[in-house]
Amino acid sequence: MKRDTIFYRIFQQSPVLLFDLMPLLPENSLRYTFESVEVKEASFRIDGVLTPPDPSGDVFFTEIQMQPDRLLYERVFAEISNYVYRRTELFADWRSVVIYPSRSVEQSTTKVPPELFSSGRIVPVYLDELGEIEQLPIGLGLMVLTTLEGNRAISEAKRLLERSSRSVDTNGIIEMISTIMVYKFTELSREEFDAMLGFKTD
Image (cartoon, rainbow, N blue to C red; front, side, top):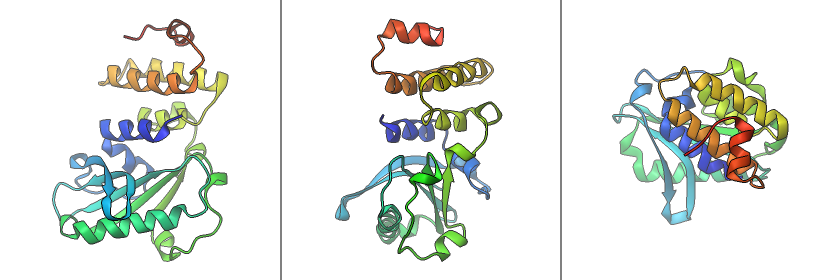
């Protein structure tokens, strides 16, 4: 399942969702923009970068990690260091959010300075610990939906569809749910998929 693509679309559609995962909210959070950034010299690609509207703000990096990687934090730190070196005039400071499906995927040891974690500069987030989907904002619910399988995924997708009818961006949410479920149930025909969720997609 191409979760990086899905999370990219979620954050691109609503960059402020990243701040729902963090304890501190920038004053101008609604004016942040989101992009995926390639750091060419080291051939690194940062999953997502939320840039402030002016250089006085912080830049926020996102990494989506659904599989174990014993050197993830070292790579993330290298990517950020390269970005900071090349674009330091564009922002005042930085933070990073690493999104995992669960703690079991997180690497067990790292050479990255522990102060980066204790200070809140690098924040690991575990989707299975965010709470029940129906209690979460729809955007966070979509993130959690990417981690669910089988009948649980179907039932939660239906609940999100019901909630989407009360959203200002109903079509965007329906499209995201559809994309997530198509990735999950690749063996289904379009007709079977439509019947499973109880609606017709374009």
